[in-house]
Length: 142
Image (cartoon, rainbow, N blue to C red; front, side, top):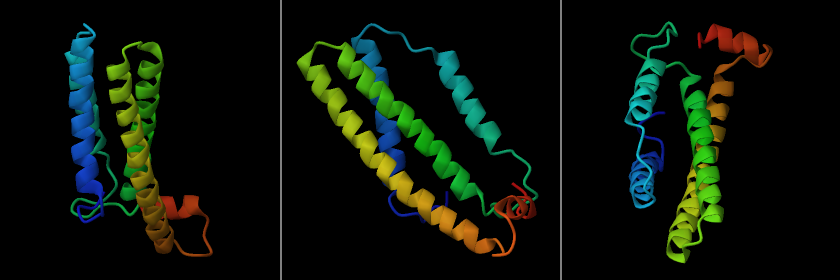
């Protein structure tokens, strides 16, 4: 997503904080992180940037839309994780922590929903009104 998108810098910080919080929660519960999975996730994220879209310097007009969707999907998964952990844990202090994380994830989803709507508006503005979206997507070389 574009660097000037409102709220995204804070969102990125929160996502990193949530990852760190998850690692701390895992440690407190005696669950060892699977570092190879974390490394594969980071590698997959980097590989996703290498897609050929016919644009070496500029971003595809569809990039912001696809990135907002991918981030929203990740936040939905995180929300479900916090909720599942909260229902499975009997520790009130830990449950309160998880409830705060779940609420923060909901706020993150709201930011991403707004960003997605804006990206969709901008992308659709680049499409000719008389052509189907699939033709526009081909024309923009996803």
